[in-house]
Image (tube, rainbow, N blue to C red; front, side, top):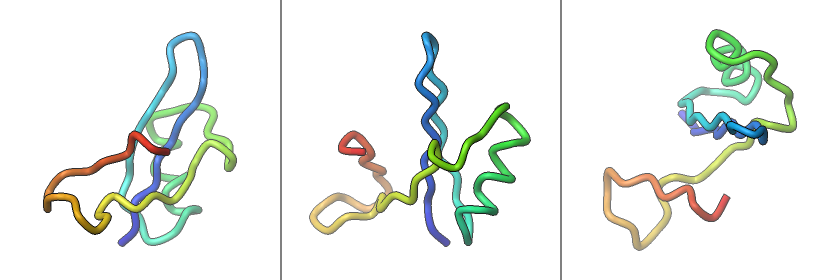
Length: 62
């Protein structure tokens, strides 16, 4: 499974990470908790980059 990050810029931003097989599935999962969820607010991310410890998700560069 892949990881997707949802980021909605707002005065109080929403940020979430979801594990999903596809971007479309990730958007549907996110819609259960956030409204609205636009496609351009959901991006696939690599949380398991070489050189980082297992079990730590580094997302600050996204």
